[in-house]
Image (tube, rainbow, N blue to C red):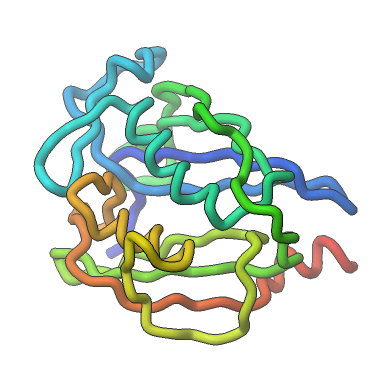
Amino acid sequence: MANFPGPYEIEFNLSGWTSPARTHVHRINCIALSNPPAGTLVTAIDMQKQGGATAKLNVVANQYWEFIRLIYPNTITCVGYTLWKYVTGTYAKDFIAAGTVTNAAGSNVSAIVTAWEVVLSFRSANGGIMKLQYMESSLSGDARATLIPSSVGQPAQRLAAYIMSADNVAIARDDSFMVAALRDSRGQNEAIWRSIYR
């Protein structure tokens, strides 16, 4: 059986890479409550959190971006985010809402690592694996290590600490929240490398 995304997805649109100019997106599956119709304001959409509470879409999008921006230099910006709803059992998705984040730029002065990716993996409550991919950030390395969540650690550890917290809204494709952090895997993304150098 196919492992379809959804039921909802927040897509963050990132810009600022040059030579050549390019953009990336970062996506997380999530749960929006009460089946919001297309065009609903981001301040009116309730999102389910891992700890059982809810918060508005604009609040959770800003909170998650505050962790993502730790791994990007200040030359990279989030130009906005979109909430999509997937048609059950398909890869088709419908627009629901769009918004902007409060602090749009990355928060460090390190250079990007060209054509590199960071993949953080987690075990979900239903036994699945959730993988979060971050393209061409400032995080380097060519190895796989145990992912240790820490709210005061390195940027990837802080991201993991958020994902393991009650505030997290990201779910695995089996529609469940996270129970364990697994790996921090880093290395070259061949598709991006080919698009830049060939």
